Image (cartoon, rainbow, N blue to C red; front, side, top):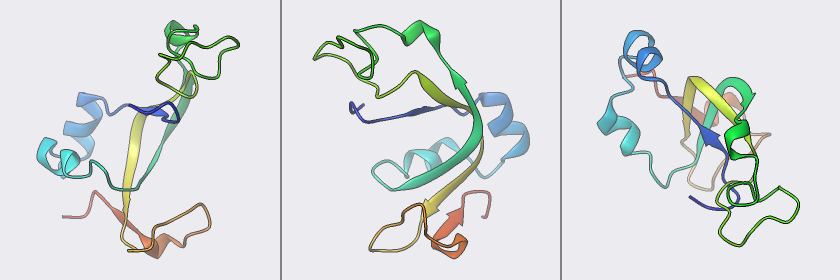
Length: 101
């Protein structure tokens, strides 16, 4: 993980019961691609320390996450379909819903 990453977690139950197209192979194929995740925002206080949280005062060089905030569980997942990339102002048409076959 990079120091500017945000953790998002797909729970097995949500993935298998509500998103049959979110197969392991399909999700792994997204590695390195720009994605947009939608879900509940929560904190993971287990990582609120200088070893993990790069936003923590006095964070160590070995920190690996930008914040203790996480998106958990992921309830919608999109992949950018524009070759020049997407951003917060990109229209919905720039994103492909992973629920689509």
